[in-house]
Length: 146
Image (tube, rainbow, N blue to C red):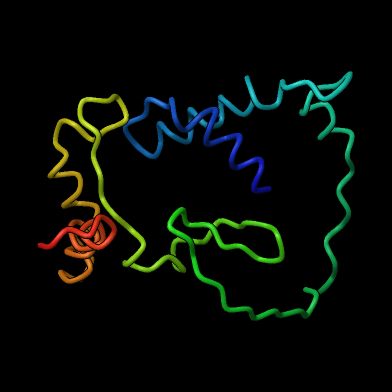
């Protein structure tokens, strides 16, 4: 799954020109059908292979298994476990791992209205968390005294 996420981010997300979550979803759906599903895997496409792969029925009850392992989320939001890297869900990535950046004048930046967009995105966060995301994490990373 992680390889599929890597393919998707490298092939679609880096070049997506979207301005809202709805536009992003529509664009991603189009990409999956028109590009990702059409990739060749031998004689067949990814979509054709998926259609031929039967899914098993869901079990009547969930399998009772629980694993607890303490790991550190890396700066790239991945967690390593037994040789694999997994994306960390946003709830597991603390405020000390998030930084705001803007890359004006590139097409993927928030310009214009960057300040308004950032304020809206973090408005519900505690002021100390806002400061960490907007300033302190970058200062710590780059060893800048603020």
